[in-house]
Length: 401
Image (tube, one colour):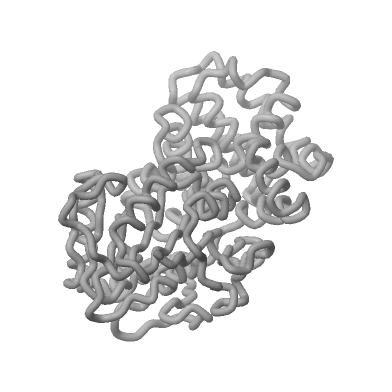
């Protein structure tokens, strides 16, 4: 019998690479009915296998002597999952190999059973030495070359390597306290608590909200006040919108995500938030005269790769969209008001490059939050997973003339 956690992780790996599914969403359905321990192991195995795909494929090809592109999808998924366990966990190798073989057999690929067994045994004997022998870089840490090139260009090679290492580790679990009390460790971001596990009951009752310290920081930087009109241009799923004071207009273009946003605002008791379904690059004429705006724009997500293991294989920079969103938000804010631009990525072309192109005067955020000051442009904030143990966010606050 295949271990339940391995079976669930295998389902996730197949869905991610065969159906282009998101790892977190595929995991939710795969672990239904499992106990807490098996859920945690399934997540570790699935996330780790997806993260380490490039390195695992290199090991399979080098030690198994077969190009991965020639393998049947079920066989490749089994080999990747098995190789991850053999290379990066302390799980018993014999159990890993046996389950890898059985997964292939269950996929009715009997002709590939002996091949799978042989490759798994060779990988088990050699993957540790192989990975250790790789030079420091994107192959060893399993990232596309372009991500390493961007980080090296913007922050230097050593910081790029540190970012790659950091985002292969489980991220800090932080929540925002909405109301009541919490069992957790206070942090330097007001309202943000570090917790060991997510209290599902408190979450279901809207007393807490899972949200990284960096994400919460972006909402705090807005500085919204009661009595003001606030625009949140790209609001779903609503963690930041629910933190804003005043009369908030939360915009979301996708009907399904807008529905989720409304449900979340109700859960969190954010009755000051009005959800509007609209394109934030071309807002309805009646939406204007705002005191402040938050543009938490879609981006390549290079600061949240630890939480989104599949994103490194599908990430795309979106500078044109980001600039269009900022231009539209700035048009809807009163003279003297502010626009906060935040993105969960680490890429100068999507970060300071966008602000420079917009042409609005940035306020000196590094003076307010010196710990998170951008290392090269201290008027901005740049949280770094390698330095700050939270998501990577770029944050700028701009004054509208």
